[in-house]
Length: 353
Image 1 (cartoon, rainbow, N blue to C red):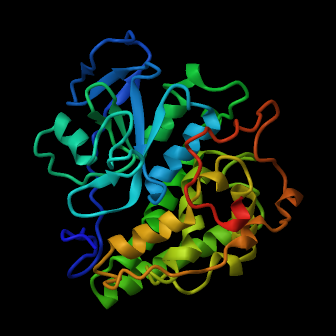
Image 2 (image 1 turned 60 degrees about the horizontal axis):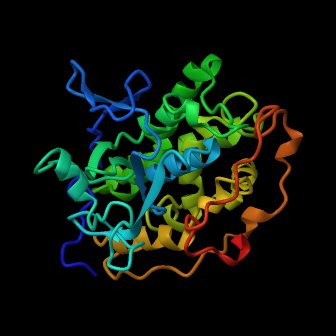
């Protein structure tokens, strides 16, 4: 265990997430090789330039997982490389474990905080993943987890693979945004509000709100194959990392214990369909997920003991989602390429091999 354990839970009431991020963006109007251009709002626009940037992520983190999935589905592996931090961290930073000396092999970073402080010395906010880093300068570009998948879809469109899906169709954007916002507040962050509550009242309020919206999802998915429209969109990508962590972590660790996903027929089938698609299940590392929550959150689990279960092999069982209208991808969309060598999950469960 680290001598500097990270602190997460609210000491006296409701958990409130810090949502201040480095909100820079990418622009195809800037020439490759050019410097970032400041905007009036204090942010910068960075040029689209394959090979210049690295997506720093962690298999354990649900906010980073969505960026990993979108990068894979769109085929951006050749344009934006992937750096993976280990599953645990302390109050200082996420750390890297891919290189022989505990560094990121492309940037040489040991602590992710060094990329943040290269941009903003003494950076006062959380050192979070995902974050896009400019490789040459080892500088953080943006850690806005909400914007990175949208930028991958829009700003980086010229570098998508042939047959890539449109995860954010213009005719559905208002509905996707509405559903994604509801999911974020009540489910993605809802499990954290329950798990990090610092009082019984705050926990019970968060728990009730979470399950009101889980029941809404269960009902919605009884009639709809996917959250918005007839194919996978960003809304589905945003929900998946929470659902796939629910039974292994959130039911027990975050006390979201009314039901498991395995006990809710429509959510179960929906999660099975997504897990069995390239880009979803093959980016999911259950061991790293469990190690992150059960070791890092020392104030919730002071022993650091990581549970051996649960058995998640039901994720590969047959489902009946095909009986509902729609399909995972529209006509003309092809599955993503096989996982790039070196980007495989480090601890595949037996049913993932």
